[in-house]
Length: 337
Image (cartoon, rainbow, N blue to C red; front, side):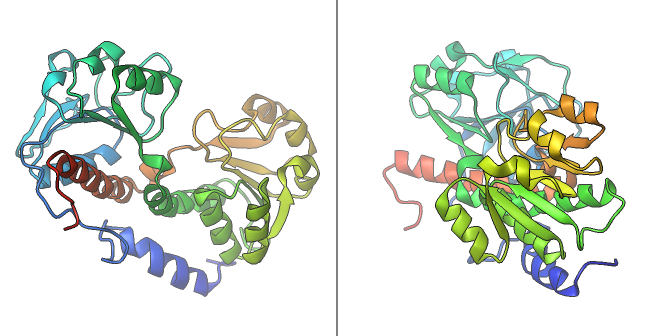
């Protein structure tokens, strides 16, 4: 493909993407689960195609799994049963695994493979054992409130460095795919602005740089601005965003609150593509972008779209370890003896 340096594929795809394409992490990258989860009862409620790999991984570890929101799918694993939400015995569960998106602000859980309506409440959590754990990708005030009120542990997977960094690989691939599909010019030579230098922002900025784009990165923390310079990219403070977007071809936002507002969009060239890969609802004024005729796309769950197997295996591996650690702590053992 024109405009893509050969060393990009040698560095990025061979070294990183290929290593996890099939979920086979090198030993130095991923600690292995050393104990089966026999007797551990897990409820998995809703989610997208990534959850299928989570189910497979935990079933292989001999956990007893109750599935809610998967009746439209046909698959058989030993120890896995499909159930209605109303039939779940929370008092017998060790943990629950929610979708990456957690719950809505009213407790409703998104069920892609079911027509059932499910709402998680504080009363349900109050029925669970004291050691019960809630696993979710991201959280919101509702979920945090009911977990706190019930005194149950809430684990936000996407706040973990391991999950976020592994997950940034399919996120980068998806972002590149969307940039190619929605522009009429090569990434090579394009002016690209990446907003935010978190774990995803860093990976995205590096990848577009390797593809030959002229990348500038906006951040607020002085250490982030220093890191951007060290990476060979152009740093700018997000307070100066309006001035920095006047010549950009692609704007990639990773900041999960409104930052690409009407004033910023007004300064952009009309051909600019905005890719917002932050958590919903993103950080872009999509209404004003449409009014100005600028293409703006919200894509908060790219790994689940472009590489659900890889993304699911990342989550399955981490969840297997976390549940194992939790069980062994209750038994007074160290999981890494």
